[in-house]
Image 1: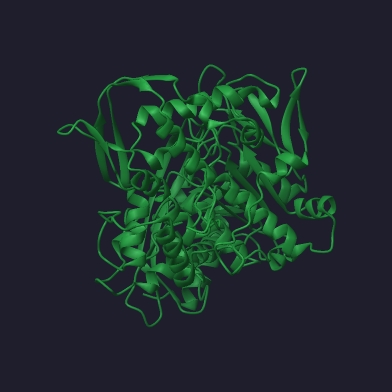
Image 2: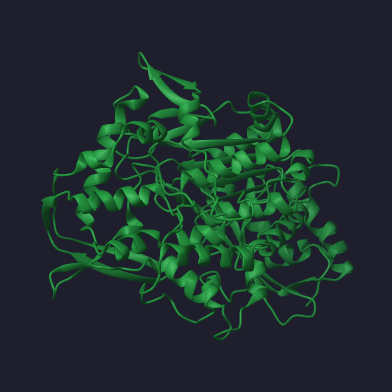
Length: 584
């Protein structure tokens, strides 16, 4: 049922004394308190269901070895509730973790998901509570927190579920923040004159979620932390199929060990270009300038038999096995790798998209081994195949099952179709962030330089688009300085997709971004470098600093300096002449 105005008045009378007196978590984490704190008329068309409220006290909750926040143990109040939209027969679930009253620091944190999931299954929520923030996730109305967008669209073959796509694209995260922040203010009886700071943190699809909020809802968030964002959905999702088409066109499917060896040799060759031999490629730009994949031809490779599991969606996975592999890197293997590294171009040689940096894994290119024929065969990347099947062909299918007649031009056409069909909801590349900047918002944007799922150049290209659109009359130096006042990009040396890389474990990862953001927003301490920590391997626990783009790390006499050089900068610049419209 909808919350009444008298209920809200009761909340003010009943909740304020409890929290003001620093009551125990057990005394405030009750269904009645939560119902009383539900915000009345939080937004036009949103109807909160007070009968849906559940509460649960959780004590001594511990998190360890996480990428996005340090180890911690804490207590919290777990709240779930539901709401609907006026005139629609829908039901959206929210889960909110509330810190103990004595630990609450007037903060709210919204979180996002990954792949086709709009949430991270509670895994991101501890990163708010440990910093004194109430933190929340949404199911976007997909039926449960474990359901993804792909479970609700298309409704039937040929019939898209546009309501679900728009909820996924930006609306559900927006409503999570609006409801969550207002509810948090009521629950903790924050005085009207006191500010509740609002933050967002997410990586991959969660990173795109963050941009969707900064681009559309300028005054909602004080600080946005964006990792490896899956923006340019039209291009990004199809791009995973590029290696499959390379292999299919060449008629050669490299053994997984062959491509793995090429990556390892690349890391070895490019490791010291930054002035420090540590097993981490901190300057993939210098690697592009000085390393030739053909130098790997003839080098031996050997891998033991293994099995791997690929997560297709939550609770759904597929396991494949490969035999022991021994051989030498072939000219065809090196040619396939070089073609992939160059990125997708159409039949006229016009660029359609970029690829991963050298030292990133070739996971999208993984072939499958046929034990009956003793040969390596095509394995169509599931995430990209499902995008084409469900969102472009509008079929209730989990993959496309053939690449016959699929050319590089076909991929470009698919990219344009996705761009045109979902440009207003999933592309998420509006480079004019003037309203967000004028509202005083701050953005920390980071991307693993060896990301093997979303090209690091994707983040650089968007940063450069924002700089050029917002500061067209300033010099390169002055425009970067003006932008860094409120939006900073950091490339993470050696890091893979939203995590450290297993092949470059000594690379430090920015684990305390929310702490950095809080210091920036609430105390005005703008970062000049970004704190990072080695999270695995022999150097686990070592601290490091990351350079703010466009500066790049360079080591001299054991000390890191952040430098700029034009030749390296140019390796990150791309012209997408396969399209008539600008691709931001």
